[in-house]
Length: 257
Ligand code: ADP
Image (tube, rainbow, N blue to C red; front, side):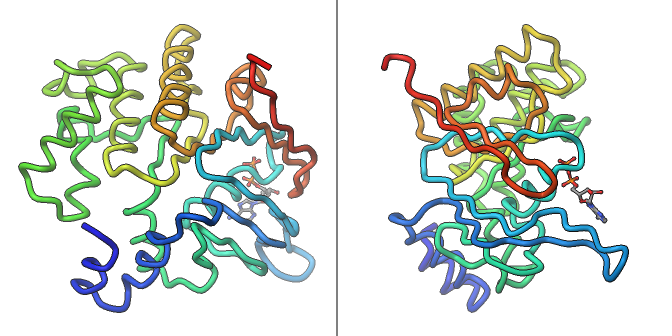
């Protein structure tokens, strides 16, 4: 469904979708003097302190930093789950600070795929049905839903496992299902929160290879939070947070250079 069709069917709430949909030439993410604080007065904690940060379409960025540095707050912000206390977050050109909860939910549903450390799959539900879920929220008809979910499972190398429930799959396979669920809507952005945190080394490598492949071959824009330097090293760019600020922002040169 195009942005304008959505607009007609859902009225004013879809305006943000239209804007984000037609925002081809702007960065996927632009944070401008973004501040997020919790509490007031003496108990105020500044979790993100006037951050400026831009992610272009097609980048793969790892967010790092010690506990309490502001990574989760930043990821929540990027996922439109939160709004800045002051400053701006432009998601594909749309200023998220001015959107209602409903509009932000629409942006998430249409443009952002989430991958979590704990997979967050529905346990009694098959791999196929788990992957179909975001399409159900988007009211995609059943036939198209099945086709797209099959396609997404194929992309993550899980063809033939459609009928398996999470309990019948390894941790690595469960994370593949979660990745298929994140990409089935063809999102503009994938946010991954410690995606290999629950996996052993071999399975972690598998998942990192898959993320790299999705980034390089499908042009998927990925922002991933990780604690581990060797995991961050697969991203082209590493951003280190410290005390709510960006301490370093380093882009790796291509290996062939
Ligand atoms: P990280 O993910 O890097 O560990 P967070 O973004 O979770 O860091 O936290 C950044 C700072 O904001 C910390 O000092 C944390 O205690 C504080 N913080 C985060 N969420 C809340 C909240 N809901 N209420 C109060 N303080 C919070």
